[in-house]
Structures are given as C-alpha cells and as structure tokens.
Image 1 (cartoon, one colour):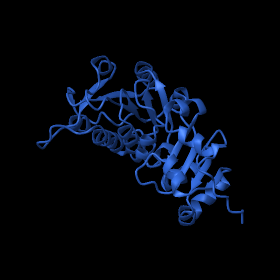
Image 2 (cartoon, one colour):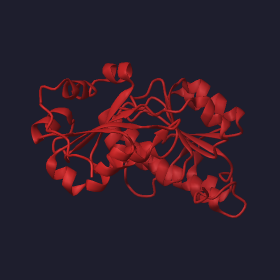
Image 3 (cartoon, helix red, strand yellow):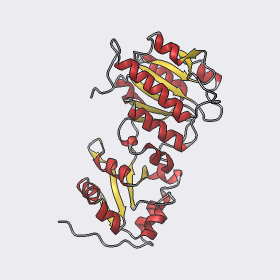
Image 4 (cartoon, one colour):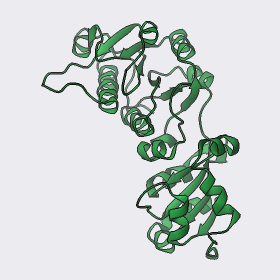
Length: 285
C-alpha cells in the first residue's frame, strides 16, 4: 500500500499554481487545466495523449479520498501526484460553489484539426461563435452521447478549458477528439474536402429538419455548425453551408436553446446514419 500523502499547506506553491489555472492566460501558458469532481477526475485518470497521462496532479480531501478510493488509486496508477487537502484548500482551488472534494490538474488534450480530418469523421459538431462555456460543454456532451467522432471550436468560440465548460461536459471532454481555434472558413472547407456535408443549424433556416429526415438526405457524413446563443450564425457563415436547417417548433415555444437544438440535430443525424443504407452505426467502435 502506498503511504498516505501529507496534508498540503494552503500556502504551498502547488496550491497557488493550481489556483491560477482558473484564469485563461495561465492555462494557456502552462497548457494545464482544472477538472473538478469525481466523474471528470475518473475520466482524466483514464485518458492519455501520445502515451502521456492527462492527469498530472490531484487534490483530495480526506473524506473524498476515502469515498473515491478507486479514483485516487487510478490517479496514482496514472502517475499523478496526489495531495491530501483540507476543505479550505479545495474551496480555494475549486471554481464551484459546493466542491466535491476532488480537483485534478490535467494536460491540454485538444487534437490538431488535420488529425480529425485524416480520420474521415462521419459526424462532427462545429461550434462557431459560441461564447457561453456551459453551452459549449453541454454541446460537447451531446455530441459524445450521439456518437459524434469530433467537435471543433472555432477561433471565435469560448475557451475549451474554461472550468465551467469542463464541468458541463461531465467527462465527455475526455471521450472524443476536440480541435480548438480553427477559423470557421477553414473548418468548413476542410470538412467539405473530407467529403462531409455541412449543415448550419438556424431557427430561420430554409430547410426543415423533419423534411431532411423524410427525404433521407442525412445518412452520409455530416457536420453540424452551431452559432452564437444570442444571434445565431452570421450570414457569411450560413453561406458556407450546404444547407441551413431549422428544428421545427410544433408547439408554442418561441425557440430552443443552443444545447437542446444541438442535441436534436445530432441525434437526428445519428439516427439517419444508423438506418438501413446509412454510412455508419453510432455503436460501432
């Protein structure tokens, strides 16, 4: 059995370094980010990039270390440095109102866009001008659940490693390739060149999602482009798409929020691709 770690001081340089990762400029400089809570830490401990463990450090209260002994064991097995910390330290590092006692420090894990294209993806979510980190993380989670093979965040979108985005992904950040900082024009053109059909999701779209499904046009490789929460997609971005598609509103609701619309669109594509004659099954490995 490994020796129990000593209780780390709130004044430790390690605590100060972890605290600074709440700020984007420090995350970019160190290429490290925070993953909070048992689900995120569990996924981080299992994740590797180029044979290097993603999780490099873990802070845990005594209670959390006991409750989640398996996660702490996985962290140690991944080579992460484990620190026992009191609740004051965890609260100081955490960006949540009610921390769950585990905070990990992880290496950046974004994937070069060229590698995503080389893998010939069949279902991709492109976040263009998405500024809310909670929405970005939730769309990433939806993409993961629908069986998408990649997510692309354009250069005008929120930081992937914003703590709120990481939390909202509920571990999905560690499940599928994500490219960041790609100009929207380059993202669209690259995907088109890879044989992917581009669908822009827009409430004012000329094409109806139900009609697209009825016409069986959605069985092939597809990338959905999702826009800003407040004003959607600019005209120049819509013009890049093969079709601009609206989710039909059958009731009296004024609209759908970004994450809900993304879930509907991604699952529609996943269903079409699983159908007879579609290009893939989302359950394929």
